[in-house]
Length: 178
Image (cartoon, rainbow, N blue to C red; front, top):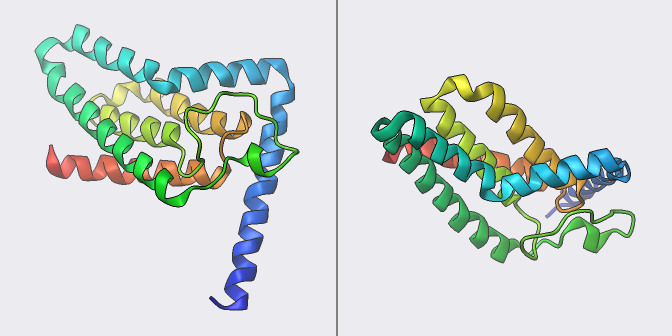
């Protein structure tokens, strides 16, 4: 690797880290901290399971394929992000920088990529392909899930961005299979 490339990567890491600190410090406000904790908790799966059950209740058998599609895309996301976390072993930001406050509970040890964001994007993308009228709920919620990961000190912005990109790619690939 050239010295120019190392310098570029160092600057990108510094920017990522500094943005992480700035966003994370909004958690000093109780309303921000508690709101993003709730969003993060819903993003653990609760929101998506309720959405899938609601689709089945409202659409009946017509909802089976969309729910199955969401479930399979979500499962592939879980397998991929767990494998990636085991390969990259990136520590969480609060473990690296003393000025990042951990204000949420991590579900696992490593940071890259954000599994919450990956799943929010993949579930939303698949659901919206069947039910675009849900965009007024799913798009803001998905954005809030991604932001929650940085606010709570659990992820760098690059972890969230990577999770979102992987989620989009998985959703696109899922349409080639299902």
